Structure formats: structure tokens, C-alpha cells
Image (cartoon, rainbow, N blue to C red; front, side):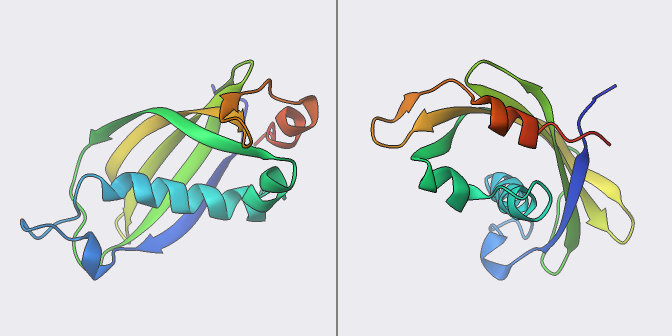
Length: 139
């Protein structure tokens, strides 16, 4: 059982997300996760990307795993659900699920690994305790 809260953002497929096979291109699913995460960082945790930038910090993605189940198409709406799976010394793993609306059938799921960096150097930096605490919301 994951001890961290899950948050949802509703998004829609844009015309430029569609590939020549008439469904969402595989790379766009990560865009949806990133857009939802930015929304949730600000809205749900109260500490968005501007707060990190003001401290000279940023998040770099180091890996991503996606398991595709069903394609999304033009005009589809979706729920993007994300949560912290675990913290490391200098980052975290964020789990995600994307469900098509209104059926809530799973389109894909996976996780992304992020490392916290000092923007001036681009190098990993230890995760400060206050950030770990802010992002450790329980369900």
C-alpha cells in the first residue's frame, strides 16, 4: 500500500497530439503526466515549480516507464492521476495512471524517476527535509 496521496487532473486530447494512425502519439502521454504534475504540485501540494526555481532548484526526469493499455483519440477527455511512490536521497519516483472519461477505462500506467538538481550547475542535490515533508501528504 502506498502511503502517499494520489491526485487527479482532467485533461483533453489536443488535435496536435494525434499521429498518422489517428490516435495519440506515444510520446504525448508523458506530456499529459507532466502537465498534470505541474498542476498538482501547485494546487495540491502548494509548492509548484516557481517555488523550486526561486530556490535555484529544478527536477530532471531520469527515466520513464509506460505500459500502454488502450489508445486515446481526438476529442477524448482523461483523468491523469499521479502520486509519489518513494523518495530517494536526491529525488523521487512518481507513479501515474491515465484513464479515459467517462468510462474510466485505463489508457496507460507507469512511473517516472526524477532527480532534484541545482539549476546553476545541473547537478543532483540532496532533497531538503521541508520539500520531502511538503510532498509526503497521506491519503
